[in-house]
Each structure stands twice: as C-alpha cells, then as structure tokens.
Length: 546
Image (cartoon, rainbow, N blue to C red):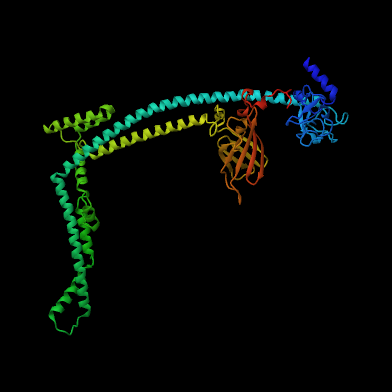
C-alpha cells in the first residue's frame, strides 16, 4: 500500500518524474518531505529545501543540481537511462535534449519522444550472447586453470619430498666428510712423524751434506772464475801494450806463456782424434750413459731435495719385491667401512711394527704415513667435500623453487597456477618476422627471410602499475620482459605482454608503438579465474543496472 501511495504522489505532483532520469532504486529519494504543506523536497546533498513541484521543471533550484535529474538545466548533473531489455547507464545531463541519440541511452529517453528509436532489445540480446559466450569460455578456461593448480600441488609435493630426501642426504654427506677429514688428518700426522724419522736417518744427513757440498763448490767456482777473468784481462793488456825492445825477461816470458795458453783453448779436432772418440763410444755397453758434468746438471743436483731423494730410493727398493705381505695388508684399508678405518689403521700399524721387529716381513715400500698415502686420503676428503657441496647446492635450489612456486609477487601466483607455463613458448608469424614468447623466459624476434635472431628481453616482473595488487586479476594480466638487445642508436629492446583469459595459450597481436618498445597481447587459461575469485564488479548479474 505504501508503494502504491508513493507512486500516486509522484503522478500528481510530477508526472514525468518517475519516467525520466531517475534510477528505479533511487525513486524513494525523490519523495516529498513528510508533513510539508505545500509539499517540499530536500536537495540530496545539502539541507536546502525547494517546492516539490520544482523537480524536473527545467530550472536548477538546488545548489547541488540534484533537483533536475531528467533535464539539462543543472550543469554537472547525471541523467539515468533505464534501457529496459539491456543495461541501464548514466550520461551527463548536458547531453539531454541535445538532438543527438546517445549510444548509452538505447531507449532514446534522453531526447523527446520519437526522436531516437528504442533499440535496447536487440542490443541487449547481442550483449547477452557475447557475455554468455565469454562466460562459457571462462568456465572452460577455469577448468584448465584448475589443472594448472593441480600441477602446482604435485610439484609442491615433489619439491617437499625432494627437500626432505636431500636434507637426509646432506646429513649423511656431512658425516662422510667429517670421517674423511679425520682419516686424512690422522694420516697427515703420521706423515709428519715418519718424515721427522727420515730426517734423522744417516742416509738423509749424507745426502744433505752432498747437496751442501755442491752448493759450496759452486760458490767457490764462481769466485775463482771472477779472479781468472780479472787475470786474463791483465795479461791481455800486458800482451798488447808491452815494448818488445825492452829486455825484461819476466815480462817476455809472461807474454809468451799467455799466447801459448790462448792457443791451446781451441784445439782443432783431427780426423784421427774423431775416429778414436767414435771407437770409444761404440766400445761402451749400450745401457751405460756417459756422465757429463754440465752446469745444468750441477745446478740440478744442487736443487735436489734430500728427503725426496730418500723417499724415492725407498720406493725404488720396495718395487723390487714381488711378495711383500705388508703391501697386501696396507691395501685392506680400502675394504674397511669408514667408521672403523681409524681403528684399523692403528691396529695395522702395531701389527706391522711387531712383524718387522721379528723380521717376519720387510718394511713396506710405502710405509704407513708416507706422503703418497696422505695425498690419497686428502683426495678422498676433497671428493667427500665436493659431494657434500653438490647436495647442499641441490637442496638450496629446491628450497628456492618451493618458495617461488606460490610467491604471488615474484613467482608463479598465489595458487602456483603459472608454474605449468614455466618455459612454455608461444609464437606468431607477422609476415616479416616470427615472434616467440617463452613464459618466464625470453622473447625473441627472428626474420623469416634469414638473419640473426634478436632478443627482445627476458622476464623481469609482473605488472609494474602501483595500482595493481597480487590479489587482483589485473596484476597477472601484464608481464614485463626487459634488458633485450640494444637497438641501433636506440634503447634496449623490451616487451609488455598483455594477457587475457582464453582456452589456449595464444599470441594474438604484435605492436611497436615506440622504437624497440613492443606491446604484445595473448590469451591463457591461467588467467581464467572462476566467478568465486573475480572482483565484485565482474560478478554482477547481467540484468543488474550499472
């Protein structure tokens, strides 16, 4: 009854009020002030009151312009087109009664009756067809997107299992590395002890004395050579500057002796002498080499390390034995489990010492703690350390991949739906070039008639607009690819990829609005959000007025 009474009031005081410029849900705002006589109306955005009969009288009475929703009298006011059969819309009141049929008012209500035809039914039918097709497409794409999310969940499970397995493996590798280091350090300490014993050996002291003697002889030889050079210079000067008419027999004998000495330094090889040398060489056994004491050979001996020579001697003597029980015993360590290896080494060393003491075996060619054994243990430790580093690196990579999987800002989205597209490439032939976009990878441009492929950029971020947020659909509708090849005399190439919902991953358009700055458009099911995830504006029913 109240609704009927309200409509009767509108019909009495302003017959055109209920028909033009007012949204149906706002009709109650245009009721007269209760109890007012004559009937008054309160302006919507102020306390100003005007006669109810002044509404829509083509004169602007309210300062806020709300009293003329159906005319163009008030600047800045809005006129509502009901557009029955289609979607209602607002237009500026200045466009009312201007003689033009506004497309937003398909019912023609913005102009006098008969001026503009009412085409809302046909437009509404076409709009609903397009929207229903889009919704059907979105529904199909949403199912595909769901499979992408399922893929992300499987990847999450795989990464979690892999991380757990790698953590266990890291713990085992750490134990192995620690054991290898313990064995290496133990062997190295034995090396130090054995080397110290060798330094106290008479043979080592003898070799050291020989090396020191050679060094001293070289120093002495150098001093003598310097004196000889000086004396030669004196004699040469005397030979070239003495007066033969001066009868000094001492000087004369010195000059003659110097001349004879110079002549003997470069003997001429006669044929008989050469033949004798050849016969002598042929008479020597073929496995004997003549020892020539050249300067290089002397320096080599001088630089010889006495301890290295001693160890080499021991290895040589040990290699002559074909049945060395101690060698076989030493090789057993390769078959001992790592946890028991240090204990085995101690027992082995004690056994070898006992057997050697009673002369049941000879000392091993490479005794416990020899440098070769230490180097081998050091290599084993380094291998264990390398294996540990490899597993630790794999663990860090898997942990980063898991974090990125559901990172909405830098990764594959809140639900990981974009992970399925990681590395997926889409192409489009534009005639002159073929463009390729590999999601989260690179964008390339390849000439169709030959030539090199150009990099247009690599994935750098999602939307850079400050108004976009990862919770919004628009955030994932734009990808930025930057740091491409530099254009000739221009900037680095870059691509802005605009994405929209589609049942397939398809590259649609290619444009270059600015030099080397490309705009691509593409569709993907990853952007087909279901209605439950869309913003409120995208969920409004088709028949709801806007």
